[in-house]
View 1 (tube, rainbow, N blue to C red):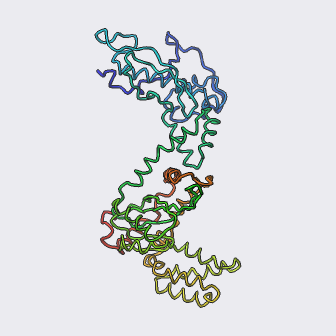
View 2 (view 1 turned 180 degrees about the vertical axis):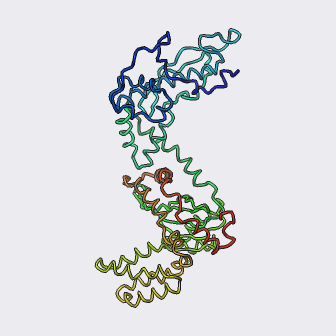
Length: 451
């Protein structure tokens, strides 16, 4: 026969008794207004009988009376929490209320403590926690000195990850839930993620990444009494199963070979043994750094960025024609055909726009690697659009910030925004065909387990 201690306290925390002492209903509850039932979450409606839901909603006319401060959900939370705490105390003492302790002596119930206000997603809820005589009771559902219910901190972090300032979050929580939360508390909650962010930055990585994209966001960060522009570099890796994963972030005033060697050395230290293709936006010093740390890696210049840089020199009225004449270069069948297309472009536009031809010639070694693959595979590697899609999500979070007070505050927000954006860009399209092409091209460098 199961003992009291073998049950989960929450499993035995039930809704209040809706019936009289004789077991008969206390009269028919008035029907809730039309549309009110639809506002109750489906998971709650499935777990509670219809008559219980009707009783809970009796007299509620608006969603505010259900979900707002002091509403039905707040009252239900209060009663469930207090009932669950009573069950926890019963487990702790080993005997039921109104019963005698084993042996007639020992620890006993000692009434209730002073009322404590919990901040919940349904507003402030005042609870009275039970006490024991010798003070050894340590509740788990609502710990001693705990003032925020489970899920409240997550709500603050979700708002922060979307770019809301501590002032905005304070006003939002006050207006929506009637909860007065100080900015110091909000800062402490968001600061708590820094340990997670550091662990994320240092986590072990895969042995091999078929593709890695590198790009940067420019942020304004206060440093030394003045606001400085700093680049936040992000590395987005495509794993052998086609899933995309942000490998880390690095802040730097200016890029260069020395900086990129530090980044790549960190990736190697975290377990990366090989990178097949690295797609970059013409980063200064990167080819030299990748050659020093991962000498077998193929560097691919982002074609889209190269086209954009080329068209900066073109008047608007000729924009479309120049773009059309560049297309045969990056859609050629192979590198030889691409070079012929570049010569044709030079003959037509070289005298008017020499910087365009010069830019393609200077980057040619890193322009052509993707031409070794068929068109569907080329789409996977010829542009950094994959990481730019992530950057667009991050810019939504940081656009409200004039500048960041510290580098850590920028790191904290970007870390949260990355995790908030993850579901939207984690899978690479046409990956199966690309993986087969990489296996043919790179052989044993791609593990057989990847196919």
